[in-house]
Length: 225
Image (cartoon, rainbow, N blue to C red):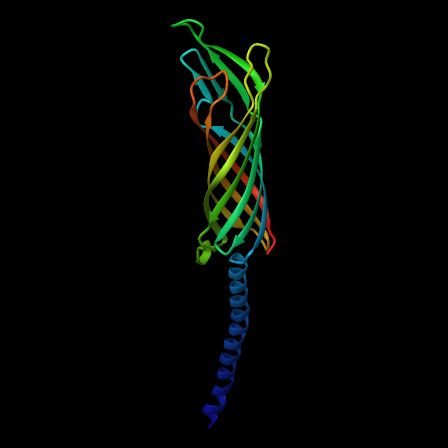
């Protein structure tokens, strides 16, 4: 009888400890489930970006006598998305003003002459279909995403007395990939890489060619859900 009586305090302590652990574990589980529900919810997300325009090739060529190329330049962007779980629709705009340089070869075998025409206004807009898989475990705070869609590129060239380059608006294809990291309720950061693929066909360049305008940006956004 005495041994049984002495064992009750230890048993009571074990029950109290188990109850305390359950009290902490249940809210934690509820928070985790709530977080998962928030990540997969339907709603708007708005993101502002800053980064760089990285032209992957020369802008244009005209035989062996004339080439044109953009410089690497700071780029800005703004994106608005509406998500249906893991799929979303995005409207994205980017702006940059790279400098335009012409390389002129007057005679065969001579060195090229560089002519800087000044800064060019480049406006880009895209409507993308996005998909982002749901990771699990500790990696759940990271949300990679991928997408594609139609786009437009508007180029406003600098004016020069000797070279008259026509402004142009051209159709493009936008390919995008990136990763989103959640910071706190609603707020997140992103690393976004997108390629605007288009055809350049403007005077005075004779050769139509594919142009890749790569925009790499870092963004901060807020989810309204």
